Amino acid sequence: MNVLNFVSAFFSDGSHWHGYDGIPTRLLEHLQYSLEALALAALIGLPVGLVTGHYGKGGNTLALIATAARALPTFGLLVLIVMIAGFGMLPVMIPLVVLAVPPILVTTYEAVRSVDPSPVDAARGIGMAEPRILLQVELPVALPVILGGLRSAAIQIVSTATIAAYVGLGGLGRYIVDGLYQHDYEKVVGGATLVAGLALTTLGAFWAVGRLAVSPGVRRGAPA
Image (cartoon, rainbow, N blue to C red; front, side):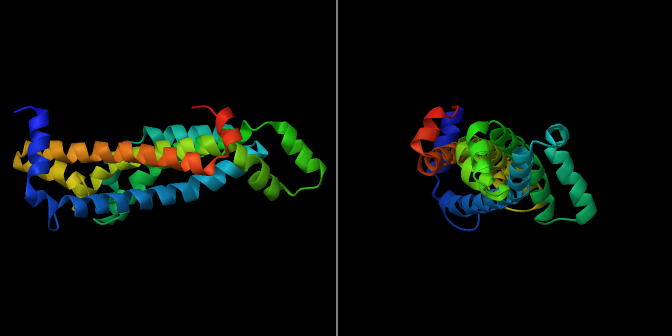
């Protein structure tokens, strides 16, 4: 039986669309974990990246922190936190946030640092306060690149939130973990397909947000 047959059998099985183990329920759980982790990562990464990028200080430190965070094994960190804090949402959120903060932090810093200094100097020349310069001059220009960092973090979170199933929680990872345990490869392939589809949907959602939030002039000059 090939992969396409597994996929077809999984999605055509009516029992996978109802109840606590149905696709809608597991998808909503996965989205909840992913959105919570992305929100926490953004609350950490965006302010630090914006402020350090605006003042041009701490770039080497941020790069070092980001490199160290990326080197941490997500599953290993999950196991360590479970041993320290027990089961629950905390052991899931911490590895996901640690995974997502570096791309947000570094991309935001680089986005603000790459803004053309001419309008920034002009804003200072007319007496604009530093917070206003950051939010009204630098941020609109840096927004496309910042959204790129958020997009990268979101896709990584969506793809990795399957770890929630390893600590007894739900989400799409439930199909993969349970399927492997039960030797039900139809369920494993179906779960993996759902995760991949959600990652692609996330990519499309950020493309749509970029079209709506970024002005056409800035968008034309932004890198792909």
